[in-house]
Image (tube, rainbow, N blue to C red; front, side):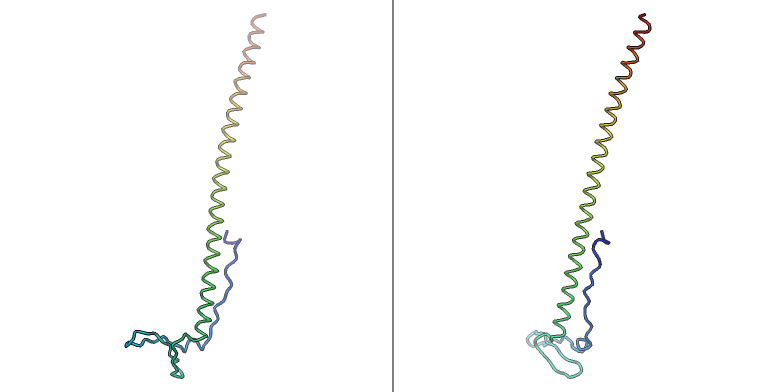
Length: 121
């Protein structure tokens, strides 16, 4: 099933600017903020490059999850179909065995009838 569902091709862009932003913590009110290591600029709101990166990561994770769910569903379907085929094969084998047994019984009856005719005459 993996071949039916190609690998996820969503790339998470690498932005050097994102590498310069750090998460910091203000102890007095236990709040997080963002600090740019090159400019010393701080922000309460997550910088755009980090939001875009996080959105790309989330989109990729969702696509991977959906692919895995499709593969799992396909594997379940294949297992169900295999079970059904095994069941049908068993039923066909049982039916063929019964038909063979009936045919063998008829042949024995016919042989006995022939013997009766030969020995009666």
